Every structure is written in C-alpha cells, then in structure tokens.
Length: 482
Image 1 (cartoon, rainbow, N blue to C red):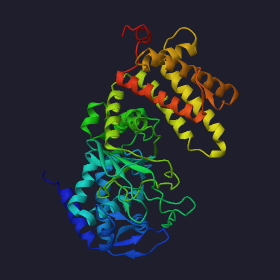
Image 2: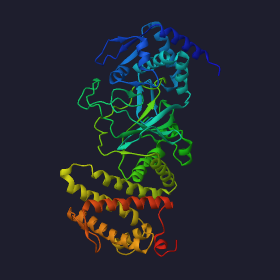
Image 3: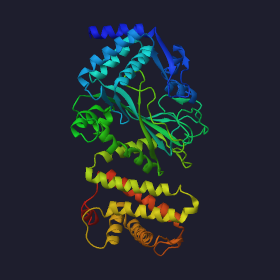
Image 4: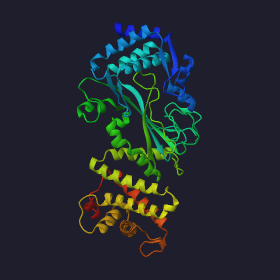
C-alpha cells in the first residue's frame, strides 16, 4: 500500500528523533533522573524472554525522551493534526483500548505520551513499523492481544492447547524469571515502586489460561461518551471491537467479551467438575505487544501474591481437559434458561468444594455451609421448573430416575436423597448436622463421607443433564416415556 506524504514525513522525523533520544527514569519513580543506554532499553523489551523483578521494574519506569526540541515540536504538531477530528476544547483526545483494562484521557501531556510511544516502537522495531502502528489504530485495524486468566488450584505439567488459540500454560516455580505475559507480582505491604518481592513461591498451584484475541483502539469524537452510561458508544466499540480469534469457539458462539464472560468462563468450572476439584479465576488481564503505539509498556494490574496459595491443587491430565472440552461444547448448546440453572448449580457445587479448604477451627461450620450449598444446587437442578407434590419427594424421585440405571440403584438413590434433603433442612434451620449420619437401614457413616457422596451425586447430576442436552421432561422420565 502506497504511503501518504504525512506517513513518509513522520518516518523521516522518527529517524531523526532516534539519534537524539535519551532513555531516562520517570520523574515519579525512585530512580528519577537516572538514564540507561538505548541498548539496555532494547534489551529490557526484547521479545520472548523472561524478566527478573528488577528488569520488570526498570521496564516500567524507563522511557525514551526526545532532546531535539525542533523535531519534538514537529512530531507533536503532526500527531495533533492527525487526531484533529477527535479533539475538542475540554480534552485533546480520549481513547479506549478494548482490553477491559485500559482507558486513557489525553490532554496536552497526552500527546507527549503518544510521542513517547512512537519513540519506543521506533527504537524496538524501526520507524516504519512505528508509523504503521500509529495509523493502524486511527484506521481501526485490529491489534492482537491475549486475554489472560490466572486459575487457582490448577496445575499442568506442560503447555496444553484446549481450542485453537486457547492454551493452558504452567507458571514458573519462583519469581527469579517471569515470562513477559505475567503482570509484575507485588507484596501488598510494599511501596508501588519497590521491585523487591520476598515470597518466591507465589505461583504454586496456579495456571495461566491464554486466549488469542484482537482489539481496536476506540477513539472518542466530541459528543461521544466513553463510559458505561452511554449505550450507543459501547455498542459501537465494546462488543464490536473485542474479538476472540478461535474458530472453534466462534462455532460455539463465543466471539467477544460478552460471550466470553457469559459462556467461556464456565470452562474452568466444568474442568473442576471433571477433576472433582475446585478451581477458580483469581485474576484476569489483557496482554499486548509493547510494539504498538497505543499500548502501555506495563499497564497490567500487579498480582497480589496472596491469591495463588491454594495448598490443595490438582494436576490435570490431557484426558481430563478433553473431557471438560467435550462437556463445555455440550453446555454451550443448551438453551439459555437451562444454562442459567446449571450455572447456579455449578457455582454452589464449587463453593461446597472450597469450604473444605477453610480453617480447621471452623470445621463444623464448613460442613453446615457445604450442606447448604449442595442443597441449593440440588434444588436448582431438580425443583427449578413446574412440579407438583411434596418438595422432598419430588427431589429424590427425580434424582433417582435421572441417575439410577436400574430399580436397585434408584432405591438406593431415593434413600440417599431423603437424607440429603433432611440434612439440608437441619443445616438451614438449626445450623447443625449430626455426625455420623444414618442412611436408610444401614450402619451410620461419618459426616465427611456422606458430604463427599452428596458432592459426587451433585456433580453426576450436572454432568448427566449437560450430556443429555438439557433438562428432561420430568413426567416423561419418571413414567418411562422418554
């Protein structure tokens, strides 16, 4: 594509600027006024490398500064002219990078910020690439990025692909060398600019889920609002500008931020179900290539080191991931009303699993809360539609016919669910549970064992409904007419 005169002029100006650029620390940092060489700066931003805490701190506080005032003024004038249609009297330019994290207002200092970004990209990838990146954003061309989620309680032995463009990535055992895509962890008791981190094992029992996406910089014109109170602006930016690149997920209807939040986040819960182990997203962020003009070098929210210390982690196998993927595909094909009910049940099942990790001096309350969570899950699954008759009878009858393969097994499930419902009522009304528990005419069993059995029945119920493609017609199921 032929370049315009303005593009050629900006390239020429950036070439002159490179020769007159100094790399200095931010005035608000602990290293105010300190400088480093261009070579050191390029090394700090080298692609596909790991970073120490010290390197990551340096990458955040050092930025290029153009010392040639004449060239500086020319570039700023050119930037302002190219962004003229987005300017008004109150603010120069306001733009939104659709990662869900970055929203910046540019006043006069904002043009300096864009100039600094242009210099950064020119130093790292050349002036031609910097100009292309600048105009790519103005022309609303997509910028690739990865939507990252830190999942607690999950471990993988090596990188695993779930869908095309969707991966599970193991984390490093310590903070000595951190991959580029990971936000800088920071101890909450330290100053923001302090690069020291004492806890070297904060990533134990956690895994990254990475999803390939693309976004467009949404430039705000005068009269357009930027925030959520303006539906028209969001419809033209938020939903349309944030796109998941996976063709497999696209076929399942997961394409943008909305469908990611509503549907794809359920994947880790379904993986929890398959593994019989609670997992959860504890942090999310967008990871962008720093060689884009409208991207901050280190804008991600720092990780709280206390979030990923679940001592009870699960190393998942590729077979379990494949099983969860199959279940996820079936889940996404269920109608929206059915998904909502299943989401409630999944959430409560997961909460019951997590109760077991609470403090031991609260053990009695853990068990009561587990029973209440499971009771809510069972009622949502088996009493969520129109039903007649006594609730406890309806619940255990439906469960028996959904889960039981023969008369003997259905009779056993009937007995179990009678006790489950009774325990749920006692937990709600008295805050206590008997230990041990008697099921039918058999011997008593420890409460822990009974809760584990109830959790298994809850997981089996959710999986069975998903595998069937949705909730059954209960009357037809019970009368054998399905």
